[in-house]
Image 1: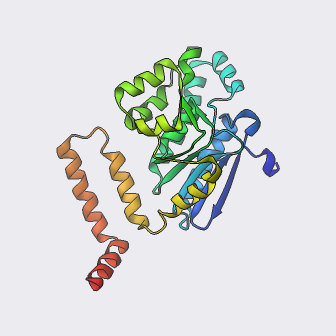
Image 2: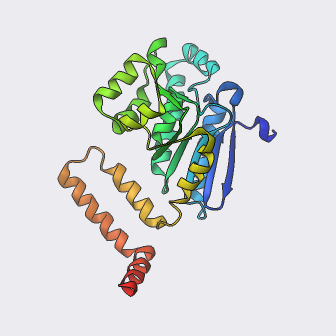
Image 3: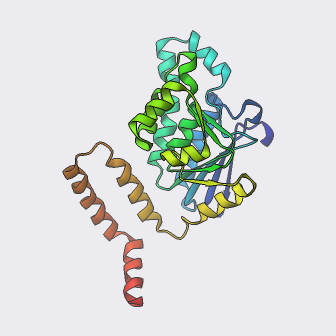
Amino acid sequence: MTEETLPLLYEVDGAVARLTLNRPEKKNALNAALIADLKKALRQANEDNGVRVVVITGTGPDFCSGADLSALELISKASVAENTDDARSLMEIFVLIRQLGMPVIAAVRGRALAGGCGLASACDIVLASSNARFGYPEVKIGFVPAMVMAILRRNISEKRAFELVTRGAQIGADEAREIGLVNQMFEDETFDEQVAGYAQGFLGMSKSALALTKNLLYQMDGMAFTEAIETAVETNVIARMTEDCQKGTSQFLKRS
């Protein structure tokens, strides 16, 4: 299989792993092969001690249009067990992104729709080109954006989430940033350079501190205040014992 026909391209540039959805003729739609490669690449990046940041992007004008049409056709003919296995396979990507001990950035140019919008919002950071479009059109074909709704609900307000998933409309990068779905928007002409610069900004941070911070932030979902504070105490203690913290504290004291 040549690079042109690989569903996913994986490359490491310094400490940044770049995962590129590579099905431009299908608007980078998700099929079984691409989902499997995404999971493999996420695990590979996580096991590489030299990787500090992951960037997920797409080849061509669009980020990801959601499920492949052939995959949707199979859904209508599959059994309950087969549909469950298929749904869980996609779910594993969303879980993996949260489990990675490093920031995962979605670099969105063009359309991010349905499962593609879910993939973007599942990332820790969403960077959007000025021409980016986001939406959950599933309701229009009698489907439910079920798994991605669990992510969306943690990203934006309840009422905005309801509007997005029940009306199926697309919104632009400006509006997506306004409601909290997007962190930063960059002009299309300089998008790749801006994304690269943003990713580099994480490289000066402590790898262990980033991993502990990410884990704690997501672990607090659904916790009561007292439980969250108690969990934070445990993380605080772990952080104090890390080599990065001890070195960083020593250097700070020397400068004081």
